[in-house]
Length: 411
Image 1 (spheres, rainbow, N blue to C red):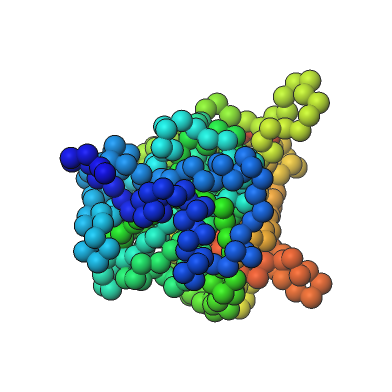
Image 2 (cartoon, rainbow, N blue to C red; image 1 turned 90 degrees about the horizontal axis):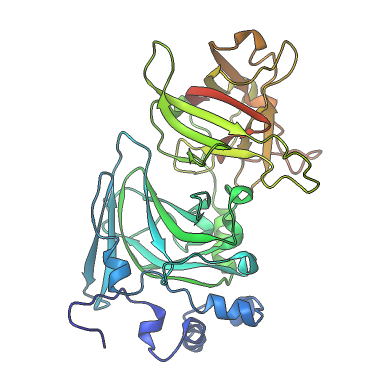
């Protein structure tokens, strides 16, 4: 029994108090409400113990620590009359700063080593919109290490039976293997929290948030694969201009990586992307570099993939760049690549060579226009080429500092 004044979000452990998460899953299977056990991964003893011991949003102190009204979101505890339990209500809106996240720490408040369960674990939660008229919520899930670096994934159609989120309770399942954005920079042996990032605006209810052995739902994934993509829309669509709605990889992570939004130097005091990085090899280091590159990614439409434009040579990625920290000389390219990632995870990049950004432009603002025809697209001879446009990203190597502003796509 809970003490007076305590609050509990319904979770698998509270439905059957004497059973752990995995035991509850077995009960679910007997009633036919969960996936077939044939889809459950094979776990060794340590994996099973870890994935049976991480309930999130569990207990009054942990839950009420999230509640309140903040600059970009409001979090409260509501009563679900049908379930006769309390659930978490999240409401968020756009602001003049990038979207923020709520950090959901582990129950003990200490970091966790998730390296051993990257291929077999995942998260599970139940979610629904508060009303039919509400906008389609854009949710991004992040596994964040103690240094603040995150591996992330947006909620996609393959994670939920009905997409976008509707007004019926649905189970979201996301495997850890899907947390690919920023994974090479994140220390999975020291994950301090699971963050929920709320982009654009929306209003949802949330309950039963746990880390579990991931079981695939073939029907859901098959339905997602058959979901038709929208054509590339005509027009100019902003990814960054003073502010950003959909981005990952931004943050101040110390002297080796500062990807922030700051006032631009010079007469123009408007905001731009201030990108500073150092990936030069460690002297006398015989092993691989701990971080091979740094990446930041952007979307203009909530991470929803679209089909390639019909005329690739008439569609462009456009941005302004000011080089203040890379002496590229008269012939070398900048140690920066711009890329596209499609819905299947395929990527293609284009180096910022002299014909795109001249070395003579050091210290000056220059516009760069990269035609979509410069990227590798899927064909019979290139089956691993791009088949859609899911997100735009920049990849940095070596060392340097640049400003980037007015980033958009033009179809």
